[in-house]
Length: 389
Image 1 (cartoon, one colour):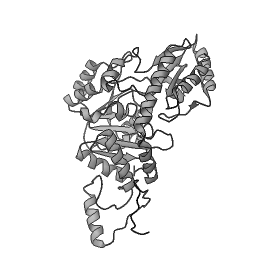
Image 2 (image 1 turned 90 degrees about the vertical axis):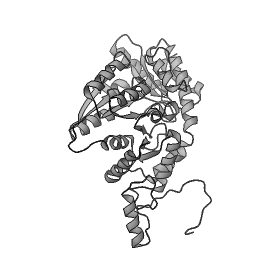
Image 3 (image 1 turned 45 degrees about the horizontal axis):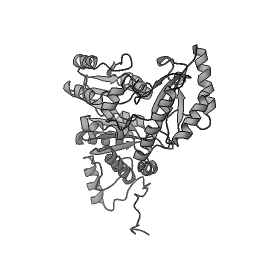
Image 4 (image 1 turned 180 degrees about the horizontal axis):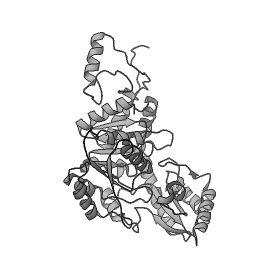
């Protein structure tokens, strides 16, 4: 079957660690061309550099994101490392500004890697009363003049929605490169590159994959120079996704819009049901008019949806009573809804906020729920059972 053309519409899984280069002259040309760090090389050399199965999955993400390029990595944290590392230069004194309401792993990376190991100067912009004050953001940008401004479209776990276009505009006004982690919103709700962001990051483990059976991250952009820097960095530190995971990711992304639309619809139904229950003292969901950033979410997404994450607080007369109600709820919804420390899966899963975030969010009755794309009535019935109603 050597060199036989196979009538398949799918990109094969190329598990080659190295690719054949038939002559010395071909080899010399391939390695010379490699220094230009093209998104797709004319000749593949080594799978840590580029792999055709991975490139095919990247092209599928480019179509979803509407970006000029996309680069896959083996996890969302690897994508974050690539996106931030390409802006670091030896001897350059700079200050980077991060929104404080970002993924806990990112915060740990900032502390353990950027500050402790690399000596970066980092500042944080914090919300007040459940929303961001953009006059304070502009004041911080004016004072700090950061090289990098980094934020998440929808925060975790309080689901604070940033006025993304305004944030990007302010960042650009003061000369910052803007990086957006858009994992919770996904390209279906907002495409930050269209509004001037420099880079967009996704934990592709979550909604792009959507089945909880692989880990992957992706960086998307339009700037060719940033792409070349990202390819070079990914190559040298080895942040390459495996061809097998790239193949599976590409097949799963074919249903992304259908899956995520249903998840958003389910989340709206569950949030409304939770809000009406006397067993629940509060519901955080951007689609509810009661949410502090509902207006920002509606303007940003154009009403296309509000995401598939819900955080709610079970009622209780004391912290201990809330913990008992939390534990009772978790046990009552099992096995249909399981405690799994991730999000974006096809089935609804949950995490107790206090157990994970501790002192940052010491809310004993609070649960973060990642809504799946199950049949809506079945899902709400399970949650009602958990509430004892």
